[in-house]
Image 1 (cartoon, one colour):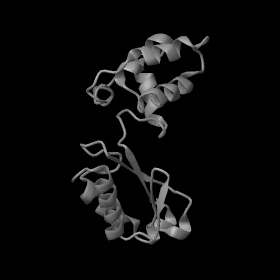
Image 2 (cartoon, rainbow, N blue to C red):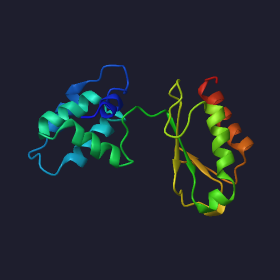
Image 3 (cartoon, one colour):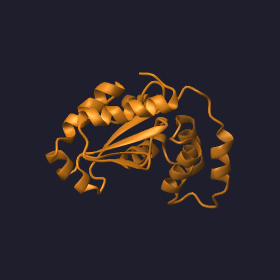
Image 4 (cartoon, helix red, strand yellow):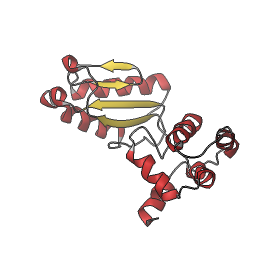
Amino acid sequence: MTSECKNEINTGAKDAIDLGLVRALLNSQTETKGNLIFLLQGTQNLYGYLPAEALKEISLFTGNSLSSIYSVATFYSQFRLQPAGKNIIRICHGTACHVQNTNAVTIALYDELGITDGGTTPDSLFTLETVACLGCCSLAPVMMIGEDTYGNLTPQEAVKVIKAIRRREGASK
């Protein structure tokens, strides 16, 4: 395994996890061939991300090397190696949004949140993700936070949304 791989896997949450949860998932399986994606999905459903300790348990159970499991986990965008924030912000960078200056909205979000694409704020309130398309082209530029869609955004409007969520959550910048 490369040192980059080891560093990425070891940068999860610092809190200990309950390995009994992933062990129960693994023990519910009768066969190990071809079920890696299922095991990763189940593990992420349990913890909200793929903790390094859980990946090691999966490696032991399946006989797959940790580096091959890491390769699968990083290939598919659905998997997270670090905990996500309470509010996941998806900012669209599809063609319609690009033409309507989603870059300016994204930069305003970077500045307001103090993170970049894929990052989570230190208070774990927000995770920011750029996506290829949200399917709301008529609302360009658009972002989703959880299940809520915000369209026809300006950088200022996007920041107002973030500030409103912070107020609602009782958090400060």
